[in-house]
Length: 373
Ligand SMILES: *[C@@H]1O[C@H](CO)[C@@H](O)[C@H](O)[C@H]1NC(C)=O
Ligand SMILES: *[C@@H]1O[C@H](CO)[C@@H](O)[C@H](O)[C@H]1NC(C)=O
Ligand SMILES: *[C@@H]1O[C@H](CO)[C@@H](O)[C@H](O)[C@H]1NC(C)=O
Ligand SMILES: *[C@@H]1O[C@H](CO)[C@@H](O)[C@H](O)[C@H]1NC(C)=O
Ligand SMILES: *[C@@H]1O[C@H](CO)[C@@H](O)[C@H](O)[C@H]1NC(C)=O
Ligand SMILES: *[C@@H]1O[C@H](CO)[C@@H](O)[C@H](O)[C@H]1NC(C)=O
Image 1 (tube, rainbow, N blue to C red):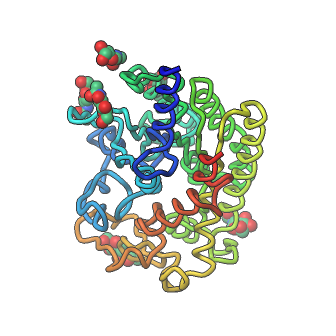
Image 2 (spheres, helix red, strand yellow; image 1 turned 45 degrees about the vertical axis):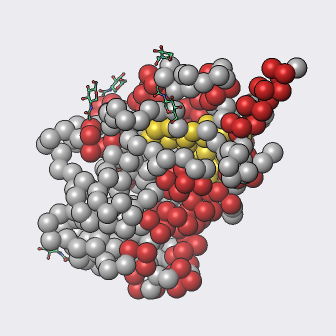
């Protein structure tokens, strides 16, 4: 009896941090691409690949130095970590003797795809050598690290993983961009959606089978609103169609199609693993919400689709003068911009998204209510 009580106290302690009195997770493990990368791309990039996001003004708002994150400060998963009293996750490829992985690690790498990179090379959709950083590779890193994760706890391994929060994504934007940039039609890009979604779902399923219970799966952002896509595609085609907030209709239609297919796949997974809490995180809605009413968010209407940091042009994105290059400046106040560098978002945008994922309305169910069952 005494042992049982002690154990149940321990379980409570693990799941509901005593100091705050509110429920919590014991750790956070994240897979994804450049929207959450905390430095893995900088470590993986071969010397021939030019990297600019390891230079100022990246990191100017929060860290005061570049960290390998593609923003002026924290990204979504950093705000999630803060909410649960966890440390901001370090990049998984960063060797560090001073800490361990018991509270989590970030496996995300910029440019990561849901479909293995060999596919894009073999099919000649991309003409250059890709970094081997796909979803499957990141899952492999997790498997390698797994014996050390949850080691030294009194709980069993599965029990320990069940108290962690996992992120799988965002994945898909890089897959679709390779196909768009190869000059393919909207229908051809759409034809990749089922395979991308299938790979994401397979990864979620693998983690659940290994003991994960809480898994957040972010959808696709409205990539048709990114200054890079707006600049490159508008210059190729003078009759592009734009949606109600000035973004490229075809790209955003594919993003929405991906999201509806992903949601349906998550519903199916919930039926199969009823004990798991699989959360769909809407990455599209919060950004469109800001773009529909920028002044409510402190963003000037004229700046809504412009990058904060860039070297000129209609959307302040210039392929020959990108953020991080010498002489390319950031705007004075990144929190008055939605987009940071032409692709990625400002810390202010990421904070708004993370709040919507934690508390709603941009997650189904909101992370905090999933924890309070
Ligand atoms: C980390 O350690 C591994 C194994 O010792 C080594 O191969 C790798 O190059 C190191 N990575 C960095 C970024 O130092
Ligand atoms: C890892 O960190 C946790 C919490 O900070 C600590 O309890 C544990 O002993 C550490 N493990 C190792 C192997 O250093
Ligand atoms: C990528 O890494 C995985 C896992 O290490 C390996 O199986 C695969 O062959 C690699 N692919 C390429 C293109 O190097
Ligand atoms: C797990 O912890 C034990 C005891 O602290 C240690 O001896 C062992 O090396 C650890 N295993 C791994 C894979 O880190
Ligand atoms: C230009 O965009 C319009 C509207 O999306 C499309 O109908 C047309 O086929 C495009 N033209 C070319 C050359 O891609
Ligand atoms: C883009 O950057 C290049 C190199 O700095 C510069 O020559 C060019 O004028 C810029 N284009 C625009 C539209 O600002």
